[in-house]
Length: 293
Image (spheres, rainbow, N blue to C red):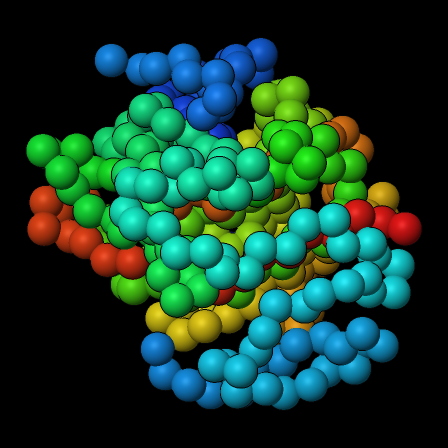
């Protein structure tokens, strides 16, 4: 597939987790704070394609598409979250179950420098869906970056299959950069982004070249908008990184990271401060993680 580079405003981003600086000044040995280590800083229904257990593509109405459970050929499921426990806004990490299975950035300036990751204040769960309510409070745009943990561990993934069913309102001034990021916080080890894009524009996949921080090896065209439900799948193997949307391959890169990474559902301000009245929701139906057998 030929990589089609998005418009310039969508390429001049830094998907570095929990950064408060622009790309040229990012320190490769900086440490990303985590919630448990609180280093505080003052839809329309259509048909979607899913991959069956034997690799066949099955079309299901979007509202009937359940979370896949169990192993797949070549993949062992190690994390599955269906959000079947409701929690109110601000109570996500107070819930004993979610506190054991999720982490997140807290009280950190986001990538653009205009928003603040306040994951717990943004998340709630209702009717089987995790909701991120993006908004401005007291002049501060709120962002969220929840991190699924396996056996309580942050990261440690060395290859894997990462899948999420989601949708989002077209919220002006906000973007997604759901990414795999090196546990070492060394950008030269790679970065895998899918889905990424401004919520009011559309989503694309990107893979950065190992050994060349900030240099794209692959950037797809915008492949869909955020308003309808979609399933985004990233398969990371020693041979490369493959991106799927609703079961259909949309891109492949043979620049494959070799060191442990963590998966972050990083949702943040986009290239500047959003309008004060801009608000809306990102919804996550389910999340699964597999390791290679």
